[in-house]
Image (tube, rainbow, N blue to C red; front, top):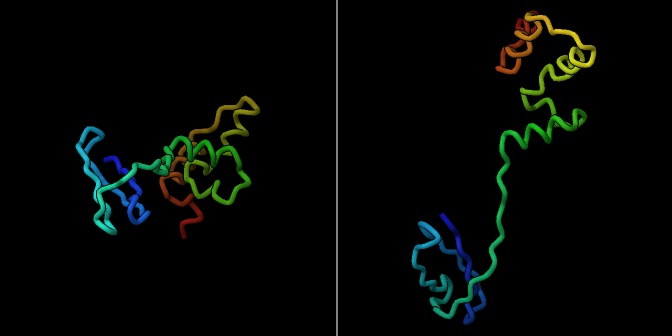
Length: 111
């Protein structure tokens, strides 16, 4: 649903209007003085983050305070170590890392 902003030429205040689509007809009326002499203005916008972009940002800096708050980064250094030395990671280690990423504490730490 688009949000449009207009500035009133009468009172100089900004009013926001929600519409169902970009093709919906809109006759803006000032929410402050009910004036109809309105000029559309450029609205600010935000850009959402995707899971992938957050992961990429957090993975890029293992020294950041938020790196390990993303459960997908648990065991990341262990996985990278095995790759770096060209070794296959044992299934038991893979299982432990995957369980930790799902919120399960490793055996011995769950007591």
